[in-house]
Amino acid sequence: MPQLDRCPPNRTDSGNLRPRRRTVLGGALGLVVVGGASLAAPSLASPAVARAVSGRTFYVDPAGDDSADGLATSRPWRTLARANAAITTGAVGPGDTVRLRRGRTHYGILRPGQIGGLVVASWGDDPAPPLVTTYTAVDQPSSWRSLGAGRWSLDLQLRVAGQVRSGYISSWCTEIGFLRVDGVIHGDRKRSTAALAVPWQFVSSGSTLVVQCAENPSAGGRTVWMATAEPIVEGRSGVTIRDLALSGTGRNAVQTATSVPVQGFALRDCFISEVGGGYGSDGASRFGNGVQVWSGAQDVDVVGNTITDCWDVGLTIQGPVPAQVSAFRDVVFEGNTLRANMQSFEYWSTGTRTAENDASTCTVRANDCHDAGSSWSAALRPDRLGKGAHLLFYRDDVHTRITIEGNTFDGATNNYLYANPGLPTGLTSRANSIRLDPVTKLQFGAAETVMESSIWARRTGLEAGSRFSVV
Image (cartoon, rainbow, N blue to C red; front, side):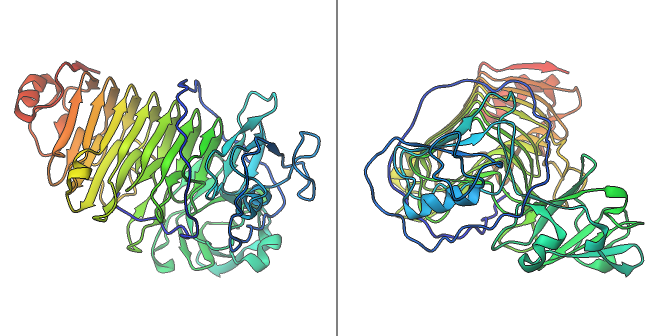
């Protein structure tokens, strides 16, 4: 969806790093969220301090101590907030690595700041990667206030956080994208309390959450998990993120910075799930992408990740492009596995076409995409007509060259491709494997199904060398 996320623009970028190791994360990760102490977000006011490349490693473990130096597995920091603060002040610098303990839940966000050459990865021998999440929870019946008619109110203000919840506590955002109760996502969000009628419908307004429930939402020891509408990771220049699980956010899971163009960001071998439901910049449309690459990004590798259960799209390249900014150069999505997202890949741009932007390139290669349109958001979206698609295109003002090749696109609720107002000028899609049921349209608004793939391919000029088959 063409929505600008409202992340505070308080960083600048430097550095360039583009590692090339490519592996695919196998299997799936069951989300396990455990209770923890409330986290306080670090101050973002201090400017980063320039320092020489050190190559040190810092460790984070929820059982650690934020007063420790973090420089050994026996002296780890406890919170991501502590790591973010060290990045902000320059205590963690270029060439350093921050490692999160495997098999543990790390509540919070990752803001790598302006440190080129920073790596965030995992440590430990647990088979499960570290889970980073913005989920916050309430499990005490006394935290809820009855409003009558089966409606229950919860105060999400930071000042009462210790009384009502554990998990992640944002210093700037109290918006909730969706609820998760007994392993089930409840995303039916209403605009007013009067509209609540069905169990687990909710309103998130200001610092107040109102939930429809026949009994107290936390009765019987039940825990209500709430996805805070704050991105889990902001990609910055020269930063590599690898081998993490990023699950439970009301916005994008990963996004490159919107304030300053990013050069050299890599996301590798991560598991992304349960994403979206927050309102976009228009205050009305809900959104949430697995990985969002914003305009001006260059040398971005998103490789070997598994992405599932996104409100919107698994992988997207988008944004307005000012005349003085290059659009998208050398953005690569390769070897990722995408399942049960509303769309698999999206592109849109607004701005002015220039010779430099005509040279912008994006590659979507060797990804394994399944069941587009079967996201948790599918029945909730007001804009779902035709949107259950693997490929989604909106405006193409800057004419980015996009090559989509060697991918598997298997199963779609509505159609293989959605393009409004039309196909991107620089689009090449070829040598893909496209597998649909006999009645699913190849393109929204077109007549051809997979049974008439040769007719559609000739008419559109797409999918040379692609293989079409029936589910």
